[in-house]
Structures are given as C-alpha cells and as structure tokens.
Length: 180
Image (cartoon, rainbow, N blue to C red; front, side, top):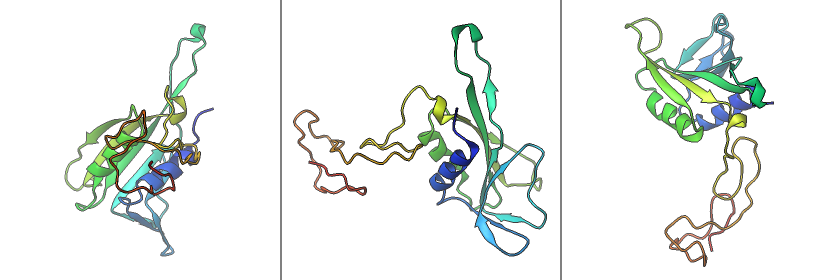
C-alpha cells in the first residue's frame, strides 16, 4: 500500500506553508489554498483563491510493470501549483517539492494572458512509499512517516566523522539533538 492522498496532502501543506495562498469560502471562512480533486472537479461555488494554490489529483496514475518478475505497481501523483497573482513565489515552491521528493519532475505550463492563473507548474511526484531509498532527516527521523528523530550526533560541518570532532560552535540543534 502506498502513501494515501490524505498523507500526501498533509505533508505538502506543511512543506509549502510559507508559500501557499488562501481560499475564501462563500461564507467568508479562509483556509490554505490546498485542494484534492479529480480531473472533472472544480472549486465549490463562491470560493475565491488568492496567491499560490496547490491542487493534488485525487487518484495517482499507476505505472505498468512486468508481472512475471513479481514487481510492485508504482504510483505517480500529479500536482499543480497555480500562481493567481504576480507575487506568488511559484518557482521556490516547485523547487522545494523537487528537493524533498526525489524523482519529481516539473513542467511550466504557459497559458494566454487572462486565461486563468498567471503561471502554472505541473509536478509529477513518485509515490514516496515506492522510492527505492529511505528518506530520513540527518538524525534518523523520517519526514514522510513522522518517525521522530533519534537525537543522534551527526557531523555535517567539516569535522571528522570517525572521531566525532566538529567545527560547529553551536552545540544544540533545533530538535534537541546534540553535536559533539
């Protein structure tokens, strides 16, 4: 079983929180501009979007596999970043998704002036559960599954990995791990 659309939505909303715009619903309530929709679905009547919108296709596409080799079926999620104004930092947001999710491809989609968003980027994201490697942060935590960090000491600053010496002058990390 791969990553669910709910897990992916939550991870991407957290990852892009600094860039996302807002939806203003018909009743005046605002919420981050993140939607999970099928191809034929649109926004609810009366909903307005400002800033950068993230749209996740509700169903991933499945990659064909050779059945005689007992391979797992891979999934690819289609995401759209839509910049509804010129201030949206769509390039930075797309670059962050590509950085965090290995194998992601990005394609800029150009529309004539006045035909919807100012800019669009279509992203194809390989299902994180299908990746042949384990995505971990530097002290052993797992970004996608929420596995907490181990608080292990890691040398990332030009120190010597074998004897633990460090060139770091700040000994406390943000998550409580300690450089030694």
